[in-house]
Length: 438
Ligand SMILES: NC(=O)c1ccc[n+]([C@@H]2O[C@H](COP(=O)([O-])OP(=O)(O)OC[C@H]3O[C@@H](n4cnc5c(N)ncnc54)[C@H](O)[C@@H]3O)[C@@H](O)[C@H]2O)c1
Image (cartoon, rainbow, N blue to C red; front, side, top):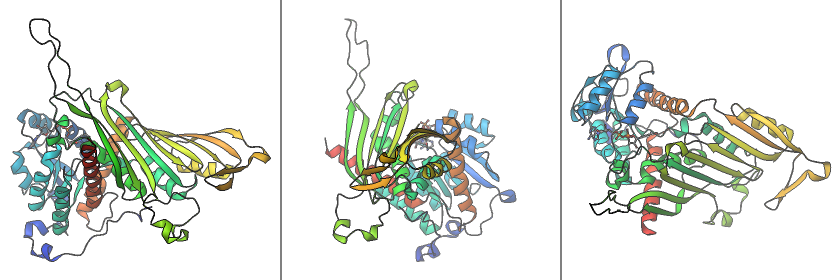
């Protein structure tokens, strides 16, 4: 397991001391009138409109200005948010802005975030932080040099169920975690053929544009992983029907619609065995660790959009549903006391004992080892929130956490710049292996 959030502030470096005054200001900085953080939004598309609604609810935060290359999008957002419209390049360096929220397509993130950091702004970047690892690392370095926040909007770890799973894995109450699986059958109904999502130059591809969320979530539970193998499949171009008067159907270029990868995480997967008890020679076995398989496809009608994340333990399994998981289901062979603890760990839990084991059935065996159990149980659990309400809460809570850091450099965050870069590293490696695999 990771040691916990590693978000301690760093000592000023030589570069930081040499940085221009504007770039050094965050420590002890006072914000706009009455200490209100002035937020500037660059890119006023679908997701910015959703996020901005949550940011408006934060205390002492005001959306001061919005910008978009599409004036109609900028004016629409400005009217709703009662903010001024500014040219994107001007907003990024404006002295009237403390934090820039970038909600432009992925390929724009690096250049715009770097410009904002260089102008002394904290930056909340939509995921992915950047579409190449080198660009993501550069942003992390510039932010660290200037003592500024620059994280990607990786909301998954702000879900109460992500936190519950982290505690449950750590507790080993279901035994060691053996493997995981994420199946994402996502809708593409809102993604027209000309949408930037399908253009790898603009999006970085599915692993980078979307997969980063789930690389980050699993890293939150198990630490930084490595990609073992990856593959992709491309949707064939639509056929053309001729009726004698020309084509009836437009030809679309082939697009990547499904990606798949297997990753390994440095988690020992045994209950009751600490790593230090494992002989050194075994610890170095490259095949050791928890395997996690990720499938992401964008090809479903909206009504069929669905996700399932499965965690398989020595004594049971957990299934989480929806892409920011809203609810889940656990099955296990345990004793009454463990079932009670599990029920307390999971929000909105309802326990059903499905079998009481006879005296002679209580000796249970798996993975060459014995344990005692008295019941089999099913526990359903829920955040109690609908998909969109939970999604909104995670967006709100991430911003609240990061804005607390903007105000106080000693505030320890759940998500750091290093986490944002780590998710890009996994995604770029998976993408490289998938392309190499042909
Ligand atoms: N965190 C999440 O859960 C989540 C969910 C959905 C989308 N996103 C991310 O949000 C970002 C935007 O996605 P979207 O679905 O809102 O896309 P979108 O196409 O609806 O909006 C993008 C907006 O950026 C504008 N734009 C393009 N280039 C610009 C530039 N150089 N300067 C200023 N504005 C520019 C476009 O005109 C458009 O209005 C992407 O990075 C996407 O991956 C994140």
